[in-house]
Length: 207
Image 1 (cartoon, rainbow, N blue to C red):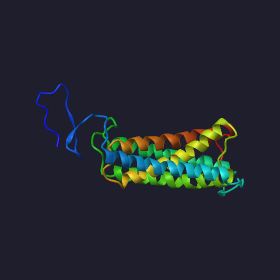
Image 2 (cartoon, helix red, strand yellow):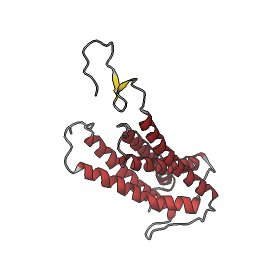
Image 3 (cartoon, helix red, strand yellow):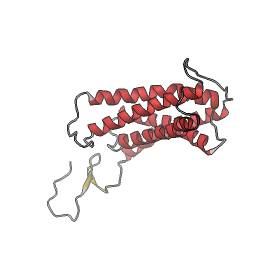
Image 4 (cartoon, rainbow, N blue to C red):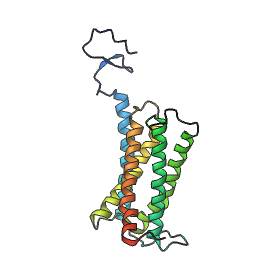
């Protein structure tokens, strides 16, 4: 355990709890470092696998459509928008749970349930979109917007896997979930901007 600071040091020491000796603030215990490396390696493999499949698979033009919508593009735009709104709810609920939301020092009992289910529904909502993108369109790099969209899609699912594995593994650093969750949210925001927002600004708010 860390010994209390008694004024004998110029700066407060840090202690590697796993090994019981002093260490620098930036040093990560080997076991923890290996665990983090494995988590991100698995996420990277998922991202690469999606990209490789999208590049090798021959696009089929149409994969999904929903009655009442004008076409697959509209379905994609609105489903991604719904996922983005749910992600905003998850971000807000996370800030409440961490005590970072002004005026809400105590998180209500229902906030953790809202956080979990908003995240689950957000990812479930993206699945039909991902299936359409991979099966119907593939990994597209015909211009900067679609290339960014393809890369962000691979990043989103890779980092989502890292986040889920982090939740089920004990001993990961406290910064892992906030950082990985932030990347997942940023990737989904980028997907919404490069697909839904682009569709709405070029075709109008139509179904």
